[in-house]
Length: 114
Image (cartoon, rainbow, N blue to C red):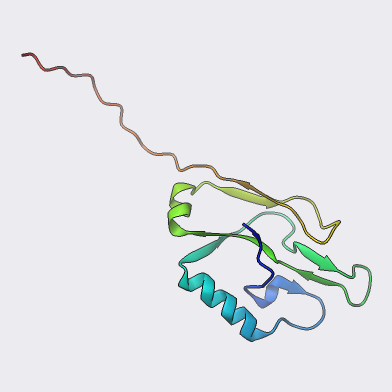
């Protein structure tokens, strides 16, 4: 979880000049080859911006939450959201790692009569 300073998809950017396709492919390749996937968060998706109010305004989703399948199995109820809209150069993300509810059986008390 944090600032990866790169984009996974072209729609992770709004503003001037599209992100170079070779960089998108490279970052996606690393994420995929490490067996990771993204936990999507609610709220404002663009976590970084520059030049607001100008013709050069750029917004990008640089901060994200990425984890392995084992983490998703352990915390399949996890929720995440962004806090507000960017007022500085980055937007904070909040992660609530809710553990998976395990269906434990209550064992009936038994004793051995010896």
